[in-house]
Structure formats: structure tokens, C-alpha cells
Length: 491
Image 1 (cartoon, one colour):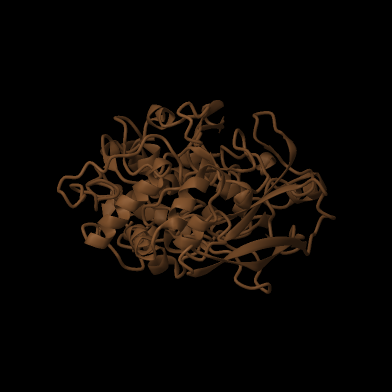
Image 2: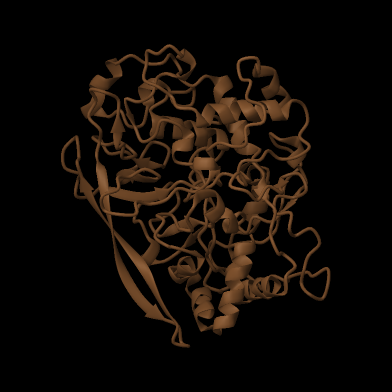
């Protein structure tokens, strides 16, 4: 839906919230570092230093914000037409406010549950930022979701839900309803050292089911821990033409470099066909609207026109009696509300880079390319001519992703296929905003399950197609490793 159509559908009279700094949004975003291979990417310098004109504008001139405060992930893109600021504020209000159990005095926000993980989008994506795995064994799951499936596929080639627990473990429930359970996360330190003698240690997670409400988990259950991603830049990624992404693929490793990035093709519920996936840890979502609808359903138990109440993913046979409980209407999330939240997620700007022309950062940028990280984390993409946000057309953006699937090796494998993605494949996540995660979210943990405590550990976890680049990083002198990491912190 284009901006002009959306604005006509939203009344601001009931939402006097103009000027709110930020909120949180849905599952989304990301920072693992992969290394991969096609031919070396030239830096294309505008000056002998290697600095490129406008490279500090990660989201292009329209999609970049200069807010470097704790609200850095919550700014609207610039120069959007119509009443974009007002539409943005409405979307912000909808996803950061709590939903409640039906019936309630605020019928536009009721219908929560009966099984859920959160009461708002912002519960997991605080300040539109990245979630965090449990810190101690006493902590319950919050920002870390557990995707579930059984061997096999559903009618559209996607993961097959478990008959008792569905497609996602729900650790919370409405009053009088039994929650599905929780998972205990433990870490074991794996020490190592660089050739120069510098020591490091990696956290190896292990998982144990606890407090299960609907019987033992099947022995052949497939599960995948996934941390909530940060949100900025999603609308710009949506504006990249599918042909641009597909042109980056090398599924049969035709150039023989050991790297075989490939697209994931997933089911589009609105178009009723398989199409290119580009969002989510395994590129298992084709559009932001579907991502939003699935999050409303899986995380909060809210129905929409893309997720009718009788199809809510986690109301399984053993829980069928919960369908008889009061609901918040048919659907609980109206199309206008879905429009507003989708628009909000689409128009969050990316923070401007810091120190992009500093000598150590530019040296780190060269090393990033030389060791091979830039082969999957493609530095630059150009958006297409059409899309939901016309102002995003023909923008040069620097997300550092190819949006393709790559085999990251046994160490990072979850063993759970997701459409065409295997149990060892992950989408290359964007790196823009990486250096602002500490400011916004208060931590620096990375990778799909939050095991890496910083970017250095994330690199050291890379295997599979990225094993060669990881080894090149390991072999760098200490000063070079430091400068590469400084470059990453500038993103």
C-alpha cells in the first residue's frame, strides 16, 4: 500500500502522539558476520584514502538519521510525502502500547492471547532495538523466541508445526490458560587463542525444556532459538528489486570459491504463491506486512486477515478449548492497524555512520574486504523504481548484506529447515546500525541466538562458507584485527 493510501485510512484525531521519540517493533534484525566469496569487491575510492562519497549515509539521503541517542533506531525517514509523520506516530503508538485480554474497555486493543510471548511489539524490540538471550539460568525466555517444527513440510513447503506446541513455544498465557513452557539456557566457555597468543573465549549454548504444559516435547522436535532483531532499514530492503538480490546468488558455486549464496523462496499469503524471502533470520518472510502479521499471531495471539482466528499458529489440537474464549473481534488486528504498524516498520531510518573517514576505520574497511567478509555482506545495494514508499526508489544504500542464504557450518546450525533454508543456512543479516546496538539496547550480543558477546566473537563463530574468511581474520596481526572491528563499530 502506498503512503497516500495509508494516510487516507488513518485518523489522527484519536492519536495525539506526534513527536514521540520511538517505540519498539517486531521481530526483526541482526548482526552476524559471514564471509563468502565471489571476485574481490573493489573499494571504488573517491579519494586515495578509500573514503567513498556519502558512505556515511547508510540508508541513503532519505533513509538516514543523525540521531545518535538512545532513540537512534526510532527516527522516521526524511522528506516523505503526505502526512507521513502523522502516520508514523500512529504506527509507533500501536506497536509500543500493550494489548489486553478480551473483552476490554478499549476494544481496538483487546484480544491478546490466549497463548503469547509478549503484550506488545516493543516488549521484545525495546526502542526498536535488538533483543537479548537470558543472562542467567534463573531468567525466563523473553527476547529469545523458540521456533518449533517436526520433520517434514506443510502444504506450502514451510516448517511443519508440532501437533501439541505449534510453530513457536509460548511461555506466557491469559489468566486461566496453561502456558506452553520455557527453556533453560546454559553456556559453556570454549577458550581459544590467536596465532599471536592473544586469548579469547566463546560461549557455547545448550538448551533444556522446562515447565512444559502440554506433555513431553517429542524426541524428533526441531527447534531454533532466535533473538529479536533491530528494526531500522527494513523498508529500504523491501525496496530492493528481487532481480538485484537474485543476481548476487551463486547456488552451485560456479566460480569455485567455496561460497554458494542462494535465495529462499517462501509462501506469500497475500499473493498466494511462492516468492523471494528477504526478512527474518532465514529469509523466511517475503514482505514486511506478512512479518508483522505473523508476529502478531505467534507472539501475541492476535488474529488478522492474514492470520484468521481459526488459523492462529499456536492453537493446536490439545489446546482447542481456548478457541471458545472471548476474542477481540474478527479480526483482532484491523487492516488499518496492520497498515500503520507496517508503515512504521518500513520507514524507520538507519543511523548515520560515525568516523567513516577516520584512518583506522578506512583501514578496517579495506581489511573487511580483503579477508572476504564483503562477499556476503555486500556493502552497497541500489533500490528499485517502485515500491510502497516512493521516496525510497533509486537510493544507494549500504546495508552490508546480500539477503541470501549461506551455510554457516555445524557450529551455528539449528538443524531446523525453513522453506528452502537448510538447518545450517542463515540469511546474511544487515550490518548497518551494528555500532549503535550498545547505545540503544544496552548490550552488544549478536548472532541468531545471542551467544556472541560482541562482533569479534561473532566472527570467530563463523564456519561453513565463512570458514576461510574467519581464518584470514584470525591470522591478521592484532592491530589489523582491531581496525577491522573499529570499522564494524562505525556502521
